[in-house]
Amino acid sequence: MTATAPVPPAAARRPSTRVWVEQVMGMPISVHVGGRTGQDVDIAVAQAFSHLQRVDAVFSTWRPDSDLERVRRGELAEEAGHPWLAEVRALCEEAQERTEGLFSASVGCCRTPHDPTGLVKGWAVEGAALLLSLPDGISYCLNAGGDILAGSSRGARPMAPWRVGIEDPRHRTRIAGTVELTAGAVATSGNAARGAHIRDPRTGERVERDGSATVTGPSLLWADVWATAAFVDPAAATAAMGRADAAYRCLVL
Amino acid sequence: MRRITLWLLSTLTALVLLFSYHTSTAGADTSGSSVVAVGGSSGGASGGGTTSSNSSGSSGSSGSASNSAQTYDGDATQTRWGLVQVQITVEGGKVTAADVLQVPMANHHDQQINSYAVPILNAEVVDAQNADIDMVSGATDTSEGYLSSLQSALDKAGL
Image (cartoon, rainbow over the protein chains, first blue to last red):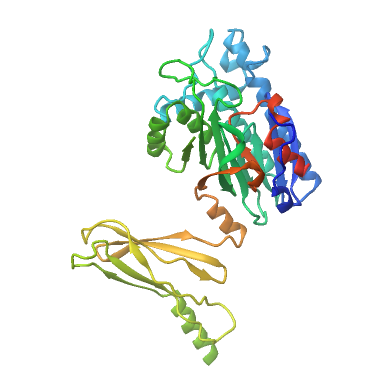
């Protein structure tokens, strides 16, 4: 770990871009906004972070008082909890179907099977991006712990696409590829930052390997789901992705 | 009056989409070929309104039976608004579909259309110092790991 990470010249290319960083859901979330400034823009950014905090309060597996944890302990009926619980559960079922079983919220540890954590992040960031799209005339790019979503609001002037570097999972100071993004998502799954934490739903075993899988496409929720599936089984996931979501592309490193 | 007629004529010329369809019968070329010509010249009749562009198509891509659908990509053509490229689908000697492969990024509407295009992954290993990037995508970073991360440096540059 080097303390002095180099600063590439991207910032010089975007003198007008403003950056906000907050730690939410146990990860760093960076919001870059270009186009114009204004109080409404600041408010939208604050609302986007608030949305992520609300999602964390409902879905955190680290907070015993979250709705999800109370449901998992049997203290709260899902129908009586936040309506997001049912929405996310339905999305998890859809994800399991689309990925032909390579993504599942029903594997993992412990006492209760349902763990939507793998899908909640992408879903939450999409909700935050909707709030960021409210003020006219801005372009934005969000990075939630390595998963990226870019877009722009009504009346935004065209600007140079955001350049997203894909980290080399074996040499984390190197970039293994780049994607230019005007609107859309880039999601990467792998063990480089948190150790083996992804399980193969077919066996229940942890996926113990290095490398990573990156998926790009219109939606961060689905790019993230597919990236997880592609890390579990690159060949099967790529084939399933071609059948289910032709708008997504995969890079396995 | 005469100016208007000239202008109309030239506009019409610009709108006419000419194409000829040729199926190779000789064995040498099985891919077929076509010519797509868009527009003509504005003839200097009036100041604006027409696009002067010529493009010749190429590269028949799929299919060998003459009745099955074949697609042809026109050459990317520089217009005053930017690069335009079209693709036509020919079936039984008739054009059944025309799709725009490339449109300019001149205004927000175009940008919205373009944004549906799939981002292209460009795999090439470079040193982070030399990568001109805004964001880093990687395995989910932790709050602890952030401080020493490349993304943190990129954020600082804009903070």
